[in-house]
Structures are given as C-alpha cells and as structure tokens.
Length: 565
Ligand SMILES: Nc1ncnc2c1ncn2[C@@H]1O[C@H](COP(=O)(O)OP(=O)(O)OP(=O)(O)O)[C@@H](O)[C@H]1O
Ligand SMILES: [Mg+2]
Image 1 (cartoon, helix red, strand yellow):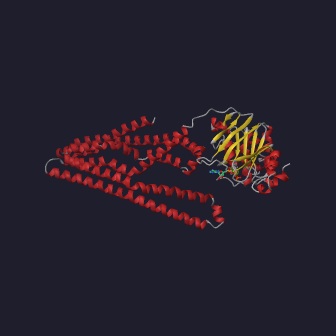
Image 2 (tube, helix red, strand yellow):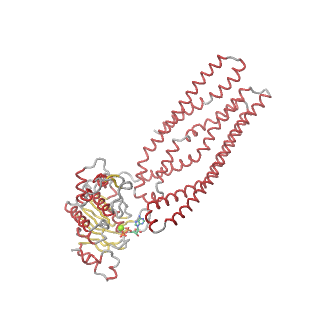
Image 3 (tube, helix red, strand yellow):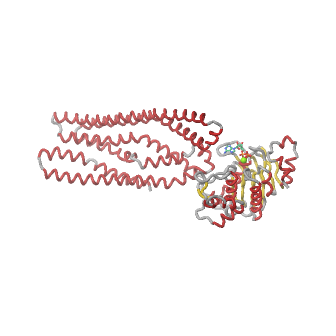
C-alpha cells in the first residue's frame, strides 16, 4: 500500500518540479522576447500560460502534502494498536517500562515526520542535478557556480549531522530523566509534602532541568549556527550567480534574461538541500524510531498467534514452575508443583519477599514461566491468546489500579457491551453492591485518575468484583483483604466460597488469616520454594511446629492459631 502511494508522490513531485521551472522560463521570455519586441499580446499570452501553470503547481503541491498526511495517518492506524499491545505485553514489559512510553513516542515521531515538509524535500532532492544541468545549459560558468554552492550546502548538512549527534543524544537522555522525575514527583506529591521532601526534590529537579536546558542550548547552537550559515550562503550564491551572469553579459556571452532565470534556477536547485538541512534532524530521528518500531514488531510477531482456549472446567495443574521477573535471571519462584480440582480453594502463605505475588502472576499468565507449565484442563497458559485466557481468569493484584471510566465499566472489564445482570452478579458476589449504591452516581460514578477518590477498601472490593465478573474458572487474589474491615473479610470469604461452590478454583495469597477461612488447601512458600502443600489444617500444623524463632518470619502465623477455625 505504502509503496504505491510513494510512487504516486514521486510522480507528483516530478511534475511539480517541472512546473517549478515555469517562473524562470517566464522571466527568460519576458526579458528576451517581450521587452525587445515591446509586444503586449505576447506578454498577455505568456501571463495566461504562466498563470495556468502556477494554478497546476499549487494544486499538485496541495495534493502531494495531503497524500503524505494520509500516509502518516495510515501508518499510525496500522501500527498504533500493535505498539500499544507491545507496551503491556509482559515479555517486553520490563524493557518497555525501562524505555517508558518510548515506543508510542517513536510512532509519533515517524508520523510527525511523514506529515511534515521533510519527505517532500527528499522527493525534490533528486531533481537538483536536473536544475544544475539546466544551469550548465545556460552557461558553463553559471553551472559551476551552482555546483559549488550545492557542494558547500551538502557539506554543511553533513557537518550539522556530525556535530549535533552527541548533543542531541544528550538532550534525549536528559529529557527522559527529567520527565520521569517530574512524573514520579507528581504521583508521590503527598509523600513529598508530608515529610518535607518537596524542597529537596525541587532542587534535584532544577539541577536536572538545568543540565537539560544547557544540553538543549548547545544542541540548538550547533543546528542554529549551521542553519543561519546555510541561509546566508544561499542568498550569497544567488548574488554570485547574478554577478557571474552580469560578467557574461558584459562579455556578450549571455543575454540579460539568462542571468535572472539562472539566478532563480540555482536558488530552486538549492531549496531542497536547504529544506533537507532544516529537516535533517527529524529525518534521522524518524529513521531511528522506525528501526525501534521494526524491532519491536519483529519480536511481537515471533510470538505467533496461539489457538483460543476452550473454557476450562475441571482442574489446574502447576508443573515444576520456576519464575523470574521479566528481563531478569534470578529465580524468585523455584520448582513449584501442585494440582487443584474444581471447587478447591488454595491459600498461599509465606514471609514478605518469598515470591507469593510472583507465583500469582505466573498462575494468571502475566509472567511467562522460565521453566515448567501452568495448565488449565491440560492446556498450558502459553498456548492460548491473552484475550481468550482473560475470559477464564479473575485476578486481583496486590496494588490496585482502577481505570478511567465508571464503576460499572471497571467491573465489566471495559467490555464494549457489558451485561448489566453480570455486573450486578459480580458486585453482589464481591459484597460491594451496597457500597456502590452509596456512591454519588451509583454504578455510573466516575473512577480512575479523573474520577472520585475511593477509599482503599472500596477499591479493593471493586477489584474483587472485576475479578469475579462473568464467573471465571480460575480466580487469583493477591492479598485481597489488606484494606478490608470485618464486613469486608466476611464478604471476601463469602466470595471465595461462592467461586468454589460454582465449580471454580480460587487461589488467595493471604496476608491476614481471615482470608484463609474460605480455602481448604494451603501452600507455604519460603524463599521461592514450596515448604509445604496440602489440606489447610495439616499444613498450618506443620508450618507452625518449627521453633518459635521461625514463626517470626511467617507474617500471618501468630494470629492464625487464634482465628482459623
Ligand atoms: N517487577 C519486579 N521486578 C523485579 N523483581 C521483582 C519484581 N517483583 C518482585 N520482584 C522480586 O521478586 C521477589 C519476590 O517478590 P514477591 O513480590 O513475589 O514477594 P511476595 O511474597 O509477594 O512479598 P509481599 O508479601 O511483600 O507481597 C522479591 O525479591 C522481589 O524483589
Ligand atoms: Mg506480594
């Protein structure tokens, strides 16, 4: 698609460049034909012809820019959703977060360049030799003047590129640092205010900002300097051609018309070079960004598109599962194996940093396993598409974010046509229905960054409702009760028992023992390894038996004794 369009733009550019000669030709005719013959009809005829040519020229230019803007839009259409996918896909999640939203910015850069005057300069560049040849056709000296000018301008372009490369890189790096610091400060504004860190953070920011500005200035000095030089050079060149022409006229080797026409022609010939100098920076940037996007797409494609998964209904088996955070080699979960039948509930306990959350992420497929498999009804998670898997999985992460939208949008996982009955069922199952009714606009209350501030407990229960929406087979809850009161605990236990009763499997990472009420199995994790797995009472007894010193690092253990029935 793009190739044909670019061929069309090339053809348009060709026609345009031929039409661009009309001004010089008109002048040549006026000086050499109309003025000596003093013929008004000839002049009128020429004016009409040149007016028509100008109209065509304007039209072609307009169409050419419009085509390029649309190409830019098409490129964005084709790529933007895939780039967005790449941003949130876990294998690149870490790299993506290291580079922040860079892939999106890359795409913007490519689109911005395509829609700018940059590409037209590239299309006009090949015409430069034609113009120069015409200059030579007028007179060899005029041609030489033009050629020398072109060579100097090209040299300026290349030195601009060479000299500005490292300052530009510095600007980009400092710019990224600056915005990430500003973003982190904005997000953690409360902390900065409350603990008097605001002043120190402001100093840090202003230090980085100062370095960014200095780098920016030196980069701008380089490009600006060369830009000014090339602009002046072009004007000087035009005068030089005029002078050469005048000399030739005095020597009676050329007509007056030729001087003017040649001077216009040389400046035409050099215009694309000057445009190229002006757009060089963005061209290089766009090329770099295009490469990054290409790399990203190739890695995405190599993952292939697996088959959709039939709805699982009987069991979950975890076989020799080892997990490392994306992009790292250190295993944080090591050789975990267990099996759960439908209707079972598993509590995962263990000290802080023992890998509970990492195991939970691997169970729902957000972190791909380093070794081993997670299977639902025998189908490994990596054999199914995230979309089809998502329908069978409910997940409450340890830190909860709601998205920009209403309460019901969030519970319905932003389905385009959500089922109100299913939303109600999920919020009832999570015991959050009454709480939602008390919000200002009930289910339509806006939440997320621009919405109302919900308490941590309400957010947690909304996240539970989102996890339970449309009764997924596997429900994984990572410390779902860390902000809950007694009512919330009861609702949670109720929800856990509800999932089990309807034949689902529920896994709860427990922080407080109240969350273990609804489960029948327990897995104790320590240092990423399974310490014990089995029926709840058995495991708790086993884990509790070691010396009291060991109890200290099982953070839930002391109250377990008293509160688990
Ligand atoms: N996104 C991440 N990138 C790199 N390392 C991580 C990441 N998340 C967790 N880890 C590491 O994995 C190990 C296990 O962390 P994990 O969050 O799974 O522990 P946890 O048992 O859930 O702890 P807690 O009870 O505090 O929630 C830790 O050493 C942690 O540093
Ligand atoms: Mg955790």
